[in-house]
Image (cartoon, rainbow, N blue to C red):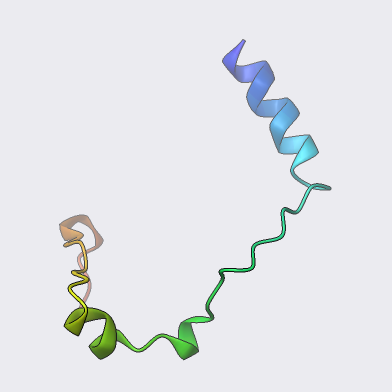
Length: 51
């Protein structure tokens, strides 16, 4: 059942593109303003990013 549903959704999602008016391009995101407003990034230890 789950496999069938996944396959059907995979096929349908190729043609169905829901419109989202709340998308902000990453180049327009002001992280300093977000952090000042109380937003806190989730620590993602599994990514093992090099800084």
